[in-house]
Amino acid sequence: MPELAELLEGGPPVAQPVPTGRDSGRRLWAHLGATGVLRGIYREGLPERGVIPDRLRDLVVQTEEEEGTGPLLSVCVQAATVLPLLAEAGRREPALAEVSRRMLDGTSVVALAATDTGPGSDLTALTTHTDTTDAGTVLRGTKRWITNAVHADLLLVLARRRPGPHFTNFTWYLVPADDPRVEVEAASGPYFTGSGAGHVHLDGVPVLADVPVGGAGRGLALFARHITVERLAGGLWAVAACRRALADTRDRLADRGLWEQPAIRQRLAAAVVRTRQLETLVEALGPAIAAEHDHTGAALVKAAAGETADHVLDVCAHLFGADGFAAAGMQHRRAEAALFGIAGGSTETVLASVADQAQALLSRHRGAQS
Ligand SMILES: Cc1cc2nc3c(=O)[nH]c(=O)nc-3n(C[C@H](O)[C@H](O)[C@H](O)COP(=O)(O)OP(=O)(O)OC[C@H]3O[C@@H](n4cnc5c(N)ncnc54)[C@H](O)[C@@H]3O)c2cc1C
Image (tube, rainbow, N blue to C red; front, side, top):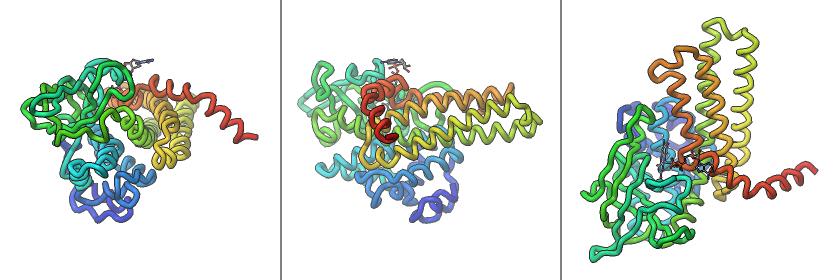
């Protein structure tokens, strides 16, 4: 990725392209850390100060094009959620500050393990829990579909500390991924290569430094705060994926002499409109999400990203005809783009948040018009 650092002001030039492969998410992370590109996406280079939306967009756009879905997924989860969360918690806990420093250098990969064996849409139902033993606090349970699981150094695990659904019954803990009581199984299937996605079994694993991350009982509060920036990254990414898919589709249709067909032009144009609508929404709401962790803005972006990506990639895949089914073809891209409506919370889950704020959102809109 030779031009990446040049795109992001302040980053030193990159000498070599990033090697690709099954663990390319990890290699990309190391590369972004070593070249200072990662540091460049945060205000004053500090993850706890929040991301700079334009820098995050530049990183996402270039990685989407050059590295593909798996490595970008690996980077987004860490850069938008894990690293800012750990850096914030590190203000009070030196062991956590050291972990976030290593992440920022690209020398440590940390997976975010929230989704449990039960429905990920209801985190308050999760069963992974803490036990207090002579060796201190240990974790037991199973996490599934965890990005970076197979190549992480540490796992940031959301665990239950008390029975029941109350908001304060959950806490984050770090555990070493190479502990013998951690078992990681790579996710099967042809999608998200390089993301390190996998399922994690925890069988009495002692937590790092015997400390909760960010305070006991603050698990869901911290998740709600930091997932907002991952949703912003997802919105920026969905725009990039839709734009590139539409450009590739238009070029192909032109090459095949189909671009002058009115029905085809209309269909593609409507998808361009949807993409530009999403882009406008992300640009309008991005600054507040980045600076204030605006929860409603992030829900609006994620709902729009999921629905827009599904629609646009479906149009592109269809217009590719039979060739869409070639290896890594547009049908494959369409399937991977479905992640925008699932990973990090399904579209229905974020629409529930939008519905909760519908009255406020609509009255604000009326006020703006008057
Ligand atoms: C590529 C990928 C990467 C991921 N990476 C991570 C990661 O790094 N860390 C992590 O913790 N998790 C990760 N996940 C898991 C992800 O966050 C969950 O898949 C997501 O929260 C949905 O949970 P679920 O899959 O258990 O679906 P379920 O909760 O079983 O829901 C299935 C479907 O039911 C519907 N549904 C559910 N609840 C409702 C409702 N209340 N109202 C209406 N419809 C509803 C939705 O259509 C939903 O898609 C990843 C997932 C994917 C696909």
